[in-house]
Amino acid sequence: MRFLLLIISVLCTAFCHAEKEKSIDQKINDYVAPATNFISDIVFFKIPVTETIGIPFILIWLLIAGIFFTVYMNFINVSCFRHAINVTRGLYDDPKSKGEVSHFQALSAALSGTLGLGNIAGVAIAITLGGPGATVWMIVAGLIGMCSKFTECTLGVKYRVIDSKGIVSGGPMYYLHKKFSEKNLPVLGKFLAAFFAVMCIGGSLGGGNMFQSNQAARQIIHVAGNTFLSDHIWIVGLFMAACVGIVIIGGIKSIARVAEFLVPFMCGIYILACLVIMFYFYEKIPFAFKTIFSEAFNPQAITGGVIGVMLQGFQRASFSNEAGIGSASIAHAAVKTNEPVSEGMVGLLEPFIDTVVVCTMTALVIVITGLYQSGDKDGIELTSKAFESVIWWFPYVLSVAVFLFAYATMLSWSYYGSKSWNYLFGESKFSDLSFKLLFCLFVIIGASMELGNVVVFSDAMIFAMSFPNIIGLYLMAREVKNDLKIYLQKLKSGEIRKFEQDHRD
Image 1 (cartoon, rainbow, N blue to C red):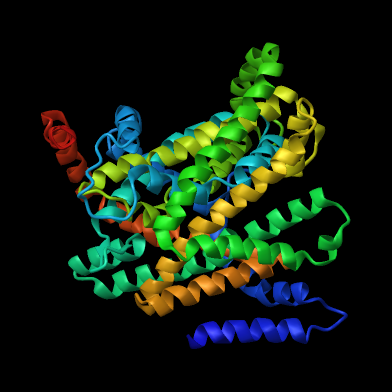
Image 2: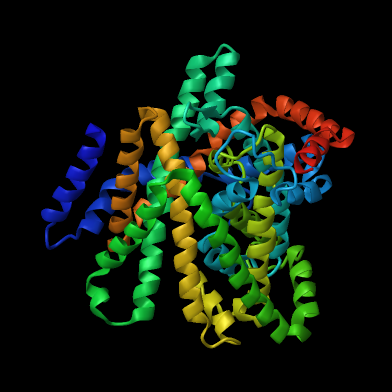
């Protein structure tokens, strides 16, 4: 509580005593600059490949993990894909299972944390810098990430904690703590769990909150034009904070109910718009696919040849679906199931929907319209122009989409942050409420200020979460594989389905 009051006091003091010659935004950015540079230099350290190209170590860390789990789990992203859809549809649901949300609700809640501005703006930037061929490597990275998600979501459920009231807490904090304790390394386990929790809180308040509210507020002001809101943007932030607060106060059940409606609605509108563009330029579709695949292996591609194209595609996919980060397992842990592997199956659909479907649809629109050759590096504007070339009123729809994507992301990351906060400061109503109030305060602050280093700092914290998480995934890979083997045997023998069929009858 003292920590919370200290933060609020510092922020309020800063706002009240800001000097005219230097805004509060600049002061905060200057203050976090040293920490930003330090953490970013570590997390996004680049390993030189050529004289002009360097690959961020974090990208290698995530991709190697994805490849390892894909091979080690016998390509379940392909062999179990249909089963994963059936589990998500609720065909194996048992109402008597412990948990708080359904499989579909858990998937929706987790997806709302990854589907965001990166799917709209980030893809356009990747295509602009890496060329159309980046699309191929985006898809490959999305497919690889599916098994990392499977592993972390399975563990999230297996090592979750359920209190006497049925409230679930799970995620890397819990499986790192418990597993390392079993290995007689309790101190290391506590350190890794606490490190993950601290990074998650920082990422929650920054990239999962302030950046989202900032971009949504700017888009609203842009559409509204020069009005009263232009000089009072904090009002927009206050409105968003109220919208967020109303939902997150009810915990994962409330968040999941909203996400259950919001995610299909957002994806549906966006994909429908993409299909309209593709139908309009239907004669260019074969040429677009030919260009995408040829440019993926073209040594003379726009920047950096094949390596540069691969880098852009892999980076966009990894930064979008967050496979290996561990955040999604916090939401999946709340599912109603007695079979942890079943939720791992649901989790592997996340990178597919986020990257292989939504990101690829954006890429196709950019390539088909040919606007990636315009040289425009502003992702959101480039995507808007691509749609506007056919649908003149689409920028207004895009504004709604930006707000909804940002809103959904804030809901999910509020849950991730609150669970990490409660892990560090104890599970109690007071602890939970204090973080949620802090989160809503940061929504207002984020909408009102120029973020700069704040966002870079929080992004670095989000990806730093992958270091302890993936270490834990490697340590527990064998037990997840054994659990998968047992689950598939039950499935083959009809034990799981027979129980569900008997229940339905």
